[in-house]
Length: 136
Image (tube, rainbow, N blue to C red; front, top):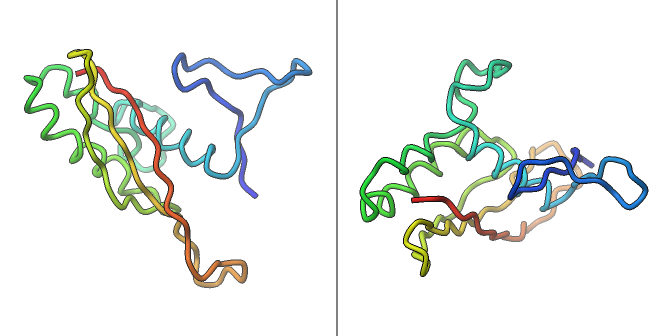
């Protein structure tokens, strides 16, 4: 099973376990962390990106757009950033306006993709949904 070191998605800091060791994430929490990190890395800024600039997103470009245009285009930025991920398939992105006019909420729905040769592939994969708040 895949796992990674846990990152606090609000601050970007590493998360510590109760025994003063690095905490870890796996399962759907790992998928959500990977999506979050991919969305908030600016496209082309990660110097160790082996895909020549495909890692990251242009999502933070919506900061310079008028609010309504940012709301209209946020889904496209998310789809563009997550398309290279081969282990999940984004099934929907909805944009929600919040009471704070400086923030929009992205509700991202996805399901896991499995390799056809994987003998553990379930017949039906469950859909996961989580939210990310983005300054607008």
